[in-house]
View 1 (tube, rainbow, N blue to C red):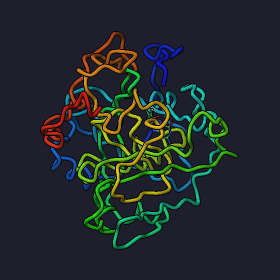
View 2 (cartoon, rainbow, N blue to C red; view 1 turned 120 degrees about the vertical axis):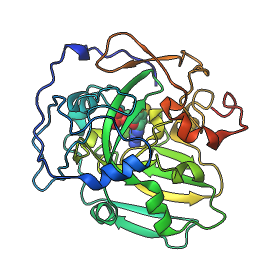
View 3 (cartoon, rainbow, N blue to C red; view 1 turned 30 degrees about the horizontal axis):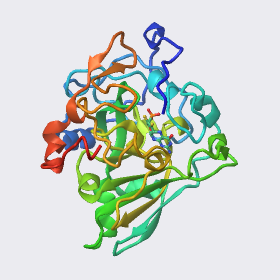
View 4 (tube, protein in one colour; view 1 turned 180 degrees about the vertical axis):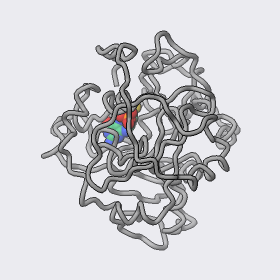
Length: 320
Ligand code: MTE
């Protein structure tokens, strides 16, 4: 993931209005409040631009306009037009267009491995099974940029509880779709496709860890990982695998696509850490898309109070 500054200056883009079907959506708000991450403001009025929703698409009210630190949300346009999705392209600004026709239905997610109830879920059944919450999270890419994104989704924990992990299960392995006919980047032999990621079981069970099915109250667009992707906000963005088709509970630590491609640069943990530089650049600061200048990167991306205990006693420069 070589760092490349975007050619479009985002601060010059004037956001336009997003008109959402203003349906009440309080359930998720209550749940997010319970997790201590309720954003400070009420229904957002930050101007957004959105594509016309697909017929029957999920439409939920956006509840907040800042994250819990008071940082404003990135616009819909920013979030959906600056994407890392190597299955399509390494050009972040080409992904949205290239992924436009990518078929995200029918779609199943198979959850298996060391579980009592291995199950294949149709993605729409999966969405109906759990309350869909709004979670405003910062996404910090390992390349040194970040965004604030209003996701819609549900805690991964709820799905894992449904399939009942066996006592031997120590890790969760996630696999994205392999569709080289539709994903030109997968015809490039450099990576060992499909995209794979992994979490320790306790990380996967943490309340902050969600499976996202939407953003800004709309179904996820293909470029952001439709129809379902992982979001782990205290880790570098590459852990948040898109277009998941398979989730396995396993005993041995999984090898991710990035660990296989560049083991000296990308470790299993990938916790956001301003103290541990990437071998080729500092991680002390980041550029928030839409802002000038750089901000200080926060330990665990600002979620240390919630997650630092998971790594007590570990040397995080070694477990990077
Ligand atoms: N998931 C898949 N399947 N393929 C990818 O290339 N890129 C990762 C992550 N998930 C990636 C992926 C990286 S490097 C980042 S920073 C985030 O997705 C970007 O998510 P976004 O495009 O929704 O901002």
